Length: 272
Image (cartoon, rainbow, N blue to C red; front, side, top):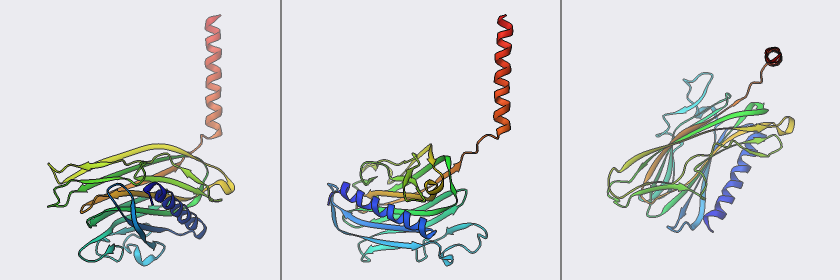
């Protein structure tokens, strides 16, 4: 199966995951890992793992009134595919979400295999209350890419299907996906000479439009899809935030109209 076809499959899986989160009003994280050849063709069947983040035992008890996972490298939220000598895996260093709303993440992806590996990470949370109208959105993503010592062939991450590594969107009450228009992250390469670790940052600011009723935005999603070169690792961290635009009070609108009217009258008097 070509990677473009797989991207569609992963996109559908992310869509279904987001809809499930909306209907079940839960927070969840799903990771899919699958091997890829150098030409981008995928090999075998991807393996998936899902964590229900509504499970209170996963959250830090010290963060009263907030939703935060921290210091998870040694916890059960690290997950590997493959044997001890050759594995691809994810370490979840930190996750946060709040109802501002904000999704924050910090992952380390390890590819200790002789093949490229693709990673698809779906992170969903319900929006309480639902959002309506114009919503201001922002996203930022940082990649710390490491060419594992001794490989001497460089390291690379790239979007799974030529788009962006990080996609951000909302799901409405009726299941429609609305892009935030802040997708970020493109191909990043370390050559086989020079530093073995390098960092790159991406950011974007834009808006989305949520409707009302069954078209109100109910679920917030961040999806990371990428290919990591064989034998290497990358740390990916960042956040997606959105704020419902606050309309001007009617009194302010009226005042603005009156000032504009007075300015017009003044210009006419001067002309006379």
